[in-house]
Image (cartoon, rainbow, N blue to C red; front, top):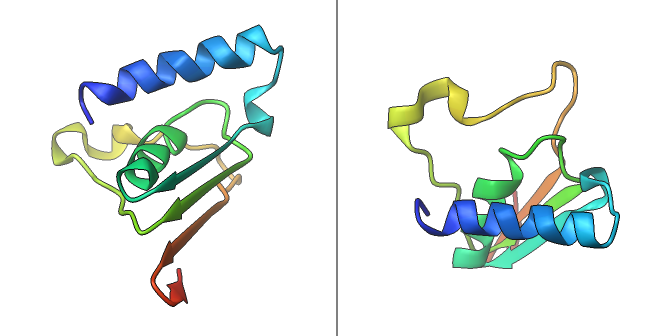
Length: 89
């Protein structure tokens, strides 16, 4: 995550700029490790993304960053869909 996350974040910034798209219309989708990256990146981006969809992945929390790891919007939720097997969370 430490190596790939900044590269993926920069890639998303370049693509959004190239196509003149607002981040609020960006959705990230991933399977397994892709779901982990989508959650890791998507929950930390400002402004909040339109959606994050993860299949068979998990959210990796780094305790060394504490509560500052996630930038929140007061009164604004971040939509996400997680799926693992036959159950949806």
